[in-house]
Image 1 (cartoon, rainbow, N blue to C red):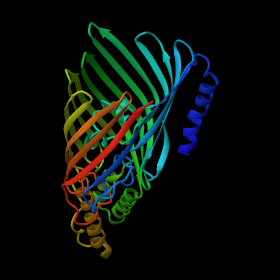
Image 2 (image 1 turned 60 degrees about the vertical axis):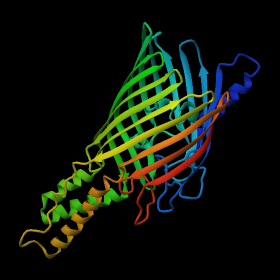
Image 3 (image 1 turned 120 degrees about the vertical axis):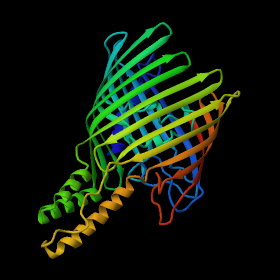
Amino acid sequence: MKSRFFVAAFALPLAVSSAYAQDSSPVRISGFGTAALTWSDTDQAEFARPNQASGVKKDPRTGVDSNLGLQADYTVNSWLSVTGQGLVRKDGEDNYGAELTWAFAKAKISDQLSVRVGRLVLPTFMISEYRNVGYANTFLRPPQEVYSQVPLNSVDGADLTWQQAYGDTTFTAQLALGRSKTTLGSNVDAELNRLRALTLTAEHGPFTVRVGRTETKLTVEAAQFNSIVSALNTAGNAFKISQLNDMARLVDNHKKKGSFTSAGLGMDWNNIIAQTEYAKRKVDTASGSTDSWYVLGGYRIGKFVPYYSHAKLSVSSDFVNTIPTACAAGSPAACNATVRTLRSTLESLRTGTNNGAQSTDSIGLRWDFASSADLKFQVDRIKPDSKGLFVHTVSGFKGPVTVAAVAVDFIF
C-alpha cells in the first residue's frame, strides 16, 4: 500500500515536469538521501532508529541510517501551491517501505498568513521539518533519546502559519490540527486522534528559539496489552476484586490523553555551532512519562565540522501495582493462583516502563566535500538503563555499547 501511495504522489508531477522541460515549468522536483553503514560492538542487542523493527549488531548494515526522499512542488498560481514528498527507509514492518510523508495544498492568505491542508509534518520537534534530511543536520542522526519519544512523523489535517518580522527578529506561530497513524512494530499500531499542536519560533540572525506543545488522544493497538487488559477485567469481574479492574484501565492504551512539550535553541555564529533541545512527554497509561534532552556543540574549520553531543532520556512512572498478594478468605480456589499470576505480570510490565532510559555521548566529524553532499563519521557511546532503546535484547545484555556509522548525505 505504501508503495502505491508513493507512485501516485510522484508519477503525475514527474510526468508534468518532463512535459514542461523546455518551458518555465511550475513544477519543481527535488530530493535528498543518506547512504550509510552502521555497526556496533555487541551481538546481544540491536541498535535501531525509531519506528524500525530491527537494527544492527556487530555486522555492518546499511538499513539503519540510510534513506531516500523525493519531493514535488507545483505552483498553481500566485497564492496556491501543492507539495508531495515520499520517503523510502527501513520501517516498523522490517522492510524498505515507501511512505507518503507530505501531501498538501498551501494557500497564501496574506503576506503573513498561510494555511495548508492534507498530510503535513508533525511539528513536535525543533527540526521536525527536516529531521530526515541528513545534509541539513550537523549530526549523523537526531539523538534518539529525544526523537524516539514521538515516533510519528506526519499528521493528516490542516495547519495555520503566521509569520511577522519586527526589526531584525522574525516571529513564527504555527497551529496544527488533525490525526496520525503508524506501525511501530510487529502487530503494534499507534494512532493519534484529536491532535492539537502549537509552536512558537523566534529567529534573530544566527540564533533560533522554539517552543512547542502537542496534545492528543493516543491509542496503541498491541496484542500483548489487549491480552493483559482482558485477563485483568475477566478476573476482576469474576472474583469481585476492584483493583484488577483499576489496573486494567491503567494498562489499557485506548484513547488516553497525551501531551508533548518541547523547547529548543540553535546557534550558528562565527563558525561555532550549538544546538540543544528539551522535551517532556506525558501519557495517562502505565507506559510512564519521560524527560529527555540533548546538547550539541561543533566548530567549523573550513569544510570540516568536528562535533560532540550528549543526550539523556529519563523515564518516570506513576504506575503502582495495587493488585493484592492474596484473595480474601472464602474466595474460590482458583482466585489466589490467578491473582498472583496477574500481579507478577503487572510487576514485569511496571519494570519494563523504565527500560527506555539511557544516555549517549557522541563524537563526529562532518566534511562538506561537495556543494550538495557531505561525508560524516560518528561514534556513539550508549549507556542503557536495563535494555534502554535497544531492540531484540538477549538475557544478560547490559551496556555500555559503542555504535559507529559512516554516511554520505546529499541533496538534489
